Length: 305
Length: 248
Image 1 (cartoon, each protein chain N blue to C red):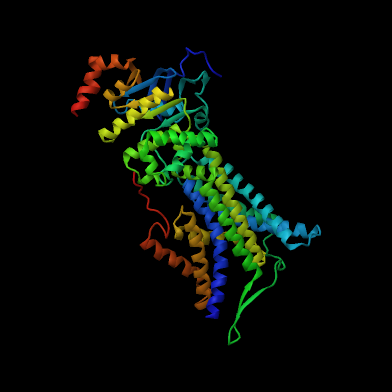
Image 2: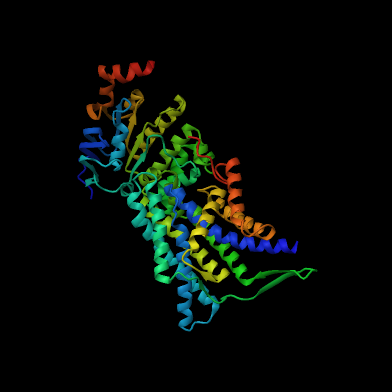
C-alpha cells in the first residue's frame, strides 16, 4: 500500500508534465487541424531556456530561490512563446492553404531543425543541474521501513500545473481571446465575418501552447535535474499520445490523458518492468482507441446541424 | 468618411469573382440606399450567396469595386469589414455549434468592440425580437432547431449594431409560421430601427413583398431590377420564381 501511494505521487507528477505539453498538441489540432510535431521540441527549448536563465541568475549572485524560480518561469515562458510564434509564422502559415499534409511535414522538419540547432548550440551531452529545490515531507513510514515521501519539487510541479490550468481554463472559457479561439476552431470563415483576426488568433494559440510547454520544460528540469537536446522527442510522443487518449481537440481530455499516461507508465515500471513502460502506455492507447475512437473525452466528428 | 446623403450606402460596380476557373460573378452592379430593404432573388447557383460573401472578401473580387459608405472596401481584409458595421447572417446560418446562445450573441457584439451598455441594449433588442432565444440562452447553439438557429444567426448579426444587415436565405428550411415570424422581425427592424437590409431569397414572393426594391440574378449577372411591387407583376418573374415555385 505504501509502495502504491508513492508510485501514485510519482505518476501524478509525471502526468502533470505530460498534460502541460499535451495541451499544446490538442489546441493546435483543434484550431488548424494539424499535429505540430515540433511541439515536443518546443518543450525541450523551454527546458534549455530555463536552465540558461537559472545559471545566469545564479552567476549574477541571486540567491533567493522563490525569486529565481519566478524569473526563470516568466523568462522561459516568454522566450519559448516567441519560438512558438516564429515557427508558426515561418513554417506553417505559408502552407496553411496548401494540401493537408504539407504543414505536418513542415512540422517534422521543424522538429529536426530544433533538435539539431540545440545540439549544435548547446552540445550533445546531457546537462545536469544541482537540485534547486530540496527537502520534502515524509508522509508515512511503513512497518517494513518503506517511506512514502512527497518532495518539495513534486509539490511545486503539481501546484504550478493546477494554477496554470486554472488560468488557462479561465482564458479559454471567459475571455474574448478564448472566445475568438473557440470561434476559429469551430468555423474560421464565420469568425472572420464577425471581425476575428484569424491569423492573429492562430498565432496566439501557438504562443499559449509554447508557453505551457515551457512550464513543462522547467518542471522537468527541476524534477529530473537535467536537460538534453533529444528529450523533446520521447516526451513529445508521450504527450501526443496523451492528447489522443484524452480525445484530440479536447482540453480537459489532454490533461486527463497526460495524467493517465503518467500513471500507467509509473505503475507499470513499479510493478512490472521499466523496459516495457512505453509498450504499456501505447497499448492502453490502442485499446482505448479501438473502443472509443475519439478518445476518452473527444466528441464525435458528426455535429447536429 | 460619410458620403453625401444621396449616395448609396453600398455601391457595387462591375463586380467579378470566381472560384478557381469558375466565374460566379460576371460584372454585377447593385446599389443599396440607407433605410431600404433590398431583395436579391434568383435560382440556385445564380451567384447570390457568392455576391454576399464577395462583399466580405471571401472570395476576393477579381475586378470591379465595392464601396460602403463612401469607402472602397474591395480589398479590405474580411475581419476589418465587420468593424465597419456590416453584418451578415450567411448561407447555412453558420452559428457556432459548441458555444452557448449567449456566447454566439457575444461574438456578434465583439465584432464592433461594443461597450457594455451597447451589449446590454443589443441583447435586450434581440431577445425582444426573438423571445425563443431567451429560453435557450444557456443552451449550445448546435442543439437548437433550424428556426432557432436562424433567429440566432440574425440575432448575432444584430448584436454588432449593423448599418447594413445582409441575410442569406433566412427562410430556408423553416416551417411557414417560423418563416413568417422572421420576415416580421426584419420588417420591424427596418421600420422601427431604420435598419438597412439586403436579403437573398429563393422565396421570391415573400422577399419581394417585404422589400422596397429587388434585383434578379441569373448566372452571375443582374438581369432585372425594380421596386418589389413592379417585379412581382413581371410575367417572367411570375413564371420563373413565383407560380412554378409555389406549385413545387
